[in-house]
Length: 156
Image (cartoon, rainbow, N blue to C red; front, side):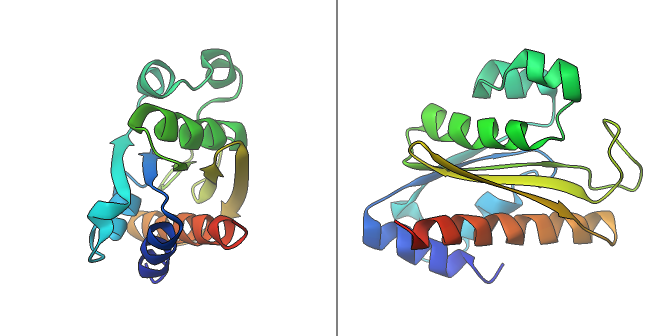
């Protein structure tokens, strides 16, 4: 998670904060940020939202979107990111959804991942097809989510 120190530093310099809503990464993004000294100045918190009713009820993901296409889609990741920021009072959000494996889920093969990072109305979404074990997919997805946020912050 090499981007975590840069993310924390950039957020701190900009006076911004971050919240996470994680599905398949189940807290890895928040944990990586929390490992960095000074994270308490920028990390508001995170929600692990495996279940669709938690995504919809707590984080505001559109239930019709979930019913139509399942949880593994780009718009869900975007709504997770913005929902986390809103719920936890952060200026930035990160959302992760995907299939860690070993089997398929929601009609998507293992390794299909959608990540999102938000800052106010700006939201970036990235789709990845990752290979490897369940643990490797989760780790790579969390690292890519941090890199996505760092890229967004670079443009701020």
